[in-house]
Length: 518
Image (cartoon, rainbow, N blue to C red; front, side, top):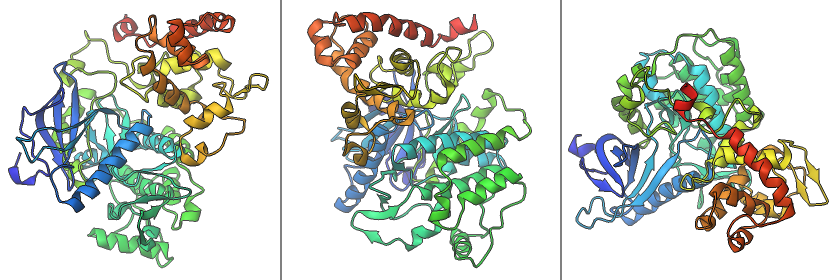
């Protein structure tokens, strides 16, 4: 590491909580990222934000950025969004350059999409279609929760060791307040929509709609598919001027060669010159289009996982510097070093995709997979709250019937929510302002289950018995009743309910790799 280029300089071997810094990965204008390990061998990327060492004005800005990022990670949970493993504040008066810094420990990726583009030598990515479909899935989950990413670009798309994709860097993410979110001024010029330049700076920030992310998705898609940006120009300023000419109707959209008709249409719709036209194309509809376009492409051989590692650390560092230190992290569910994870045919392959969360050969409807994972991964510190537990509850409650209605009990939807209870677990302030009126679609019903379970799991830790069963009993009654009974209350309704719940838990619990391989 070169001493002068790190926003936050952290020596090798430095301890932060349970983590030991091993090497620098990247540094941006407001944070630095280092690889680190725990004593257990788990690896992570530690993002150091100097919230204790700068001027008052700088600290206000950095505290806002750190607050946005932590708020997003607390509220947003989806397999397509990078996961926080730990958050800490450095308490080290003997190191004034580090004392007071906010540290976010994130799962460690193999590389970013920007890194992969650099390795591609000017062309697009061989698996760009699949990557874009997964990017759209993560963005759709973020938008459905009422957020704007604010900085979507290849440097903030992480490619994990198991081939999955994560959106990262939520330092500019913001929750919608009505139709807009408010972001600090700035951003990466090549990915900002034309209308952004006309927005004035208000006391709360610059007004931004979710369609700004759709524009950035179009720019990113063009890059990943062709290796080129959609607007010509040697400099960012020249490309921005070309985009504005297009938006004002003074020039056409001259996309690079090499795009198939479905992808050309995809990119063009994302780059609709005005917000109203772009509004017709949601992240979810674009996810479906990306998946269909990818399915129609010729299959190219995918590189083995052992080859992906070649440009991992150096390339991630180069990509992260461009975007304020994006970050990399572990593929979920496997904390071993990469060398151990690719040890050869004698080692069972790790669980990947949805298999790590639940049995995909069971009767869980695939259309609910993303929602179930989103709900079941909201509080990693609570081991009782898992996607397969959420799936088991849905099975026991409704047999996955999204149209269930039981007015006699005032329970509705796939999760049998009582409206007055569901109100307090909805994702946005506007939704929580009034009691919701049925029907409750799965997109509305399933994610709040995670918030409910995460709220009560800590209260039940000392209750004897299986913590999963106790938590479900609290779901059906209340945490107070479970604590008072010292376990599952003896109620006729629970005596009928719990056997069905236990059967679903047994059916959905993911197999260990060794069992799966045998």
